[in-house]
Length: 246
Image (cartoon, rainbow, N blue to C red; front, side, top):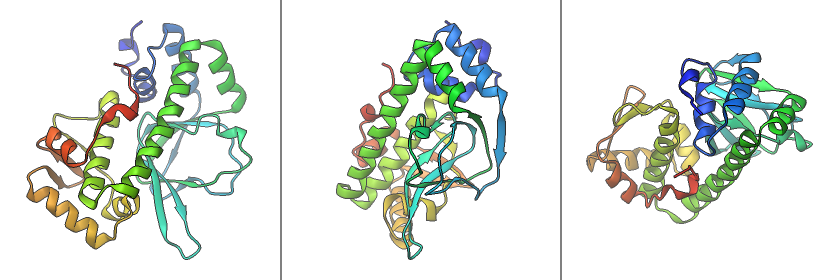
């Protein structure tokens, strides 16, 4: 089985992401590639792909761009409960629910593919490796949510931020979006504060502490990590909850 022939495909981030969970058969790769390229859509930064209370329909695969899952309280306060990165599946099997319990908004311009329920279920039924990869990704997403709960509930501010930076880096790595020791970082300080449960002032102070320790550089929407091992130690980060193949 080879993914080389799909390197130039628009679906390549999804193929690589799912391939990190389960080695895909040639037939599975081909079927995924064809299905994903069938209906490609775009949305601008700030657009909500789906809102809390909407009836979910179909499955979305993110081909490029970053999104956030979030909840908004009645007084307008927002909590980001997850980041959706290139290659991620946006809620496989969500169509089984009657309504969305959170919103998903684009942090950057995004390109995504949307599959109808019947098409997605046929894809899952046709190839066991695709089905297993999808289920593993769903289980990993639940594990990430548990880790975020621990992050906000038990880690201190510096540990929270360091842990989240490490998580994003390790999630970008399988899809080839780490360049040396750097990656694109379109997440604003407000987004990061809303994801870590910190005030903007506390978040800024924490980032300055990480910079002062020589662990990171955040400049012009790029994150550079000089010592990833030290950053992982600072964040008490163990990547086992991402559940990639070993």
